[in-house]
Length: 238
Image 1: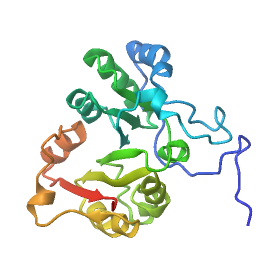
Image 2: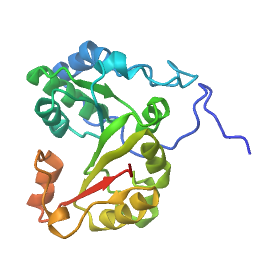
Image 3: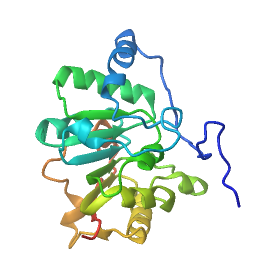
């Protein structure tokens, strides 16, 4: 069976989240117009890279270890990690343009130089990341899609996890945080099915955040609403 293609050459990929929310403020529009192109990790889009040539990460991060945050929201955690680990290069992936604008403002304010931004679907980035190139990945408070009929839209499905597994380096860590019990259940089924090992040995391993954790606005909302965060750590076998 021939795979259906977009006129650009891209495979048809359903995307169910929002690309844009409230009207951007003038300073946010300036961030997008002035800063976004300079923070690109390279040719990710199908229009720029129809042959899906792998990104030259050595040119982007000068040989630094590569980390990836999938769906960075407002960018709080992403900037914190960049500040804490200047020896690492980090790519943040987020299709919601308001969140991208928020991150760009935080990058300007913090002055970090080891971040790159892909304002689009993570699957397009997975296409062009070299196999085994990512040493750590984060999936923090992803869209829960609470209705059962929408669970196939969640990130923790094989459609997303298989290419993530491919781009991770053997031994790489994959962190998942969520406050939705059913998302925890699906994560613990699907992520090991994709080949990852869950590293928890007891309840404290998922009840307490990582030592370098930075609480996001989504987590703060969950805590206000009395929902319990879960912090799950997986690893791609070495």
